[in-house]
Image (cartoon, rainbow, N blue to C red):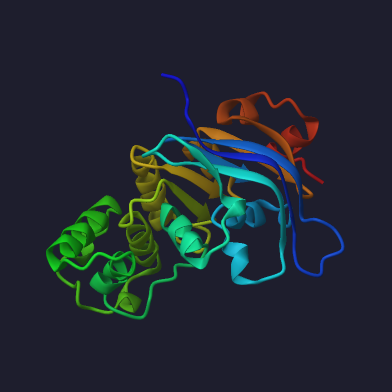
Length: 263
């Protein structure tokens, strides 16, 4: 079966407001449907900056500059749309519903477990309580937290462990049925058991959606991803299937980084 590109990043550059030079320069990168793409590279290389650009998160702070294109496939119409051309607030809200984001530190809302997941559904215009309930249950099941949460849905989400909170945040995102899920070092604040649970969950979720993960953990990238992008100083140095990047990279810089000989 031919690979379908769900997101196509073309000649993309990004500059923060007031910065002397661009943080990202001329990045070209395809994101394939129902695959996991890992972004690796040293701190400050632009991985998280690129990730946040993919759902226009930077627009929460005005004055940043985008150049190039980020084309997102509409699965219903089969047409691509350049998300950098979206201007209206309602367009950006819709974009963030179809390109969800999970951060390094779990960010549950200070409300019940149930309301955490229901909140986005209500915001997206769903009013039928039965529909909301069904979607909440399904999302908690999809995020592999239903068994732990089903008897405490009215309890505060703040009482969950770090790993449970991160899975709840994933449930909150997948409830909206996004096309792409962006994960910014989602396990770096978690213990090894919670990390394993999140990795297992992410592997399952790629059946339903496309995933981009930023990680400092080389083992995690090699275990989890289908494709890997290595970034350095704001540029994409190499992109390929993950096994090629880790076993037979084309660039010496990539080899030095993945083998730990970097710097």
